[in-house]
Amino acid sequence: MERTLLIIKPDAVERNLIGHIIGRLEKAGFNIADMRMEHLTVESVRRFYDVHQGKPFFEDLVDFMTSGPVLPVLLEKANAVADLRVLIGATDPAQAASGTLRQEIALDVQKNSVHASDSKETAAREIAFFFG
Image (tube, rainbow, N blue to C red; front, side):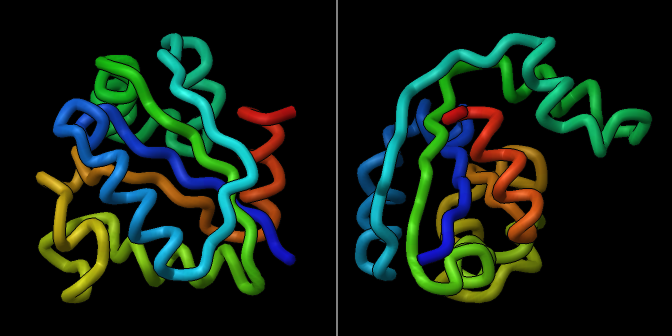
């Protein structure tokens, strides 16, 4: 059983899409091991997304991720990291495959509704960040 992290971002929380996203995850065979609603601080977002510091979109990302509550979700499934990346689709919803979460519900490249770990190593770090 592999573990990965999904974050339901402020735009999806605001649009009441939590149940829809969770339903899609469960239908795809993911087990929810833990989740909790949080309001992220500027400091915590800067730490979480430290790999993007210095990039042109970084400050907008910090502002967006602190604009409302998020829902980090700890997921379990065989091949969880890769399967979740397929389910959510490309970062830019205009480029996301048909039927993916981002193609279906994301508003734009920043307000793309969900974050998912991109590797097993990243998943371990991100899970520890939210769930210890």
